[in-house]
Amino acid sequence: MKKGFTLIEMMFVVVIFAFLFGAILVVMTSSDKSWRTGRDKITEQQEARKAMDNMNWMLRQSNPNWVISGTSYPVTITSNNRIDFYQPVFDEQGNIIMLQKVTFKLNPLDTTQLLKKIGTQSEAVIATKVQSLNFGGGCAGCSAYTCSTVATDCPVVKIDIQTLEDKGFSLTSKATLRNTNISLSDDTEVQQPESGEF
Image (tube, rainbow, N blue to C red):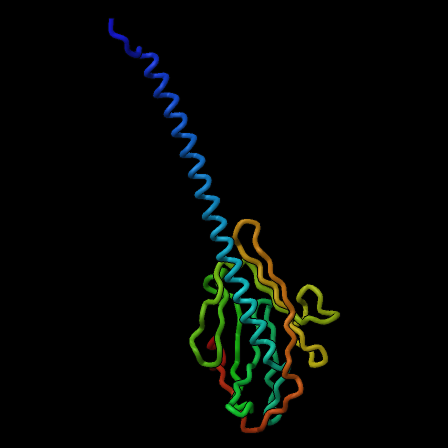
């Protein structure tokens, strides 16, 4: 007499294997999704940190209010999410030969992008997936990013970047402008975009 499997036994085995295969597929899909989310979060955090480091480094070289031949070139904060300031350019002897206007702001066409423009160079996207960006004076009386100017007696800029991913990632920093006691010669060149260009 030949022995074999009955139809019911075969169906039972097929159902068990289908269940196991489905469970493995769900676990693998969930793991892949978690891995991708984690990777995107790390990328977003790295972008935000790089942008923050870049802003801090450039702001530290500035002055709250450069003056050339009686004309002021101050740090200005507009709508809490745009900052304009002037960065010095040095020659080989360490003398300032030029000021370049630097602007950081959210892209008005895609508010998740952080833009940077230096002088007359083309604008560049330095961070994506930005939820919010805030600038303000960093001294007493300037809480919650309410100050639109940087005082010469307290040359500090407060910066806050919030990212989009999941619950978001928040970075906060204070940059102290260090070139506060430098006088510029009357022939110092200023490089900046035309009015209204950026």
